[in-house]
Length: 113
Image (cartoon, rainbow, N blue to C red; front, side, top):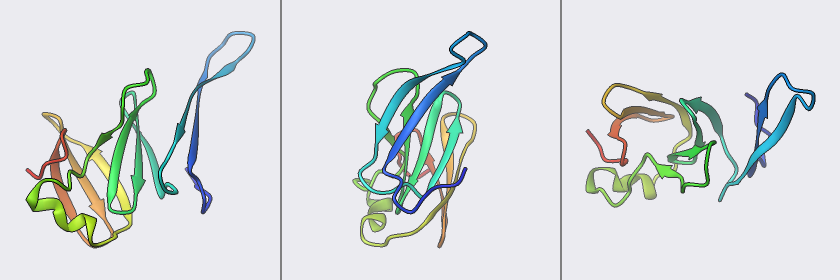
């Protein structure tokens, strides 16, 4: 996926084989422009400066932050902006988050593993 420099809104469509072919499912407004987008399961993974967030595409549940800056091991993320490159879901609700300067393993609550 390519993103414009000011992508702060993501439109999610459902595509099917009916006459209408597609309809808008959800609109997600972001606090800052997205740098990466990916789909992990039924969630949209949005990479923002020093952060990754998971948004459900099925319902209106709040996003899950994969970098919990309240966790002392990850608090440096709030002071050092890094470009997000990739988030990979691993086993047991764990994620590998890759940034421009480092990679980190976190659990589903954004705490370092």
